[in-house]
Length: 430
Image (cartoon, rainbow, N blue to C red; front, side, top):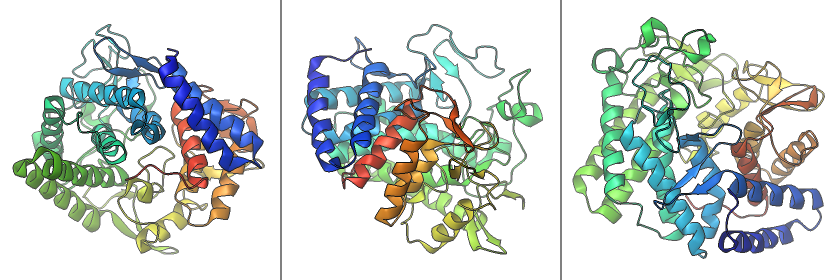
């Protein structure tokens, strides 16, 4: 998957320009270069049809979520480097084609080769690697298309494929506002952990109507305990508002603009009504999940969208009072997935072993920190816990960072790069 000189040479010049901000941090310089080059050299595949297929790392499939996160730092080159603009247009186009093929699927094959979880009891096709429905899988393509416009001025992505995918996204989110009565989505996987399948014959835990839209799975690909995943609904609000802006300013489509704005308002009202709970120590905070029937989960998961990532996504500012209280909660022992050990403290996930911390969450903690000292502390922590590999991993043992999962996980590498850029004062425009 090694790219051409037209891609690698301008990338190397840009990396060197970033490294000049890091004169006293030779380890950061080296790791930043390794991660930026590794992602584009090993996971991006330009195809003959002009699209770009992006594997997540050690799994040969394209996740809508991961591929958008892997592409995000390269947006900073798209305005000045035509090859990067073309590469990212290819990522967006392929994502939108996948959404048009099946908006319920989260991961896809490069061709209709039938790889992946074809035995799952759901509406599989040879194009689909996995069909776990996650709200964020539909947010990320809209968000990446929007960011490409905002950072490079590019509008070629807003074509018929975009219109089709946007319409399907709106239709699905509307349908899943009433999952009990309107949805025919089911997902059952046999002989697996409970987190890999949905209860009630694949329909998921029972829910009531809230105005929010239902999700079967979290961005970790683990099943939701309750159907309304708050951070993913927040991301849906962000994506819908971005879609409304695209409809107004680029597509000149008042109907699409109005529909996106209306749905965003309904989901937002649902979050405000059902997604905020009172904690006896921290006060009013955001729940992670709820069902609209009085049940909720107080936690946070390392994968993005997360409650920690609220300012990063653009849903609310880092000074928002409810976010500030929620942040204190999720970065404390009250969050069941916050771990502390000899090597580090940070947020993990039920997706990985207990006591394992995710570099994605540490990078996000730095990206959403308000103090420069906190950003640098977390950057230092990421570099100390790389297990000697010079790159990030999915997770590592808080007691022994030489023990880790997934040595080739490009999403984590690019989140590390985003924190490096943030420390240098270089940010993707929202």
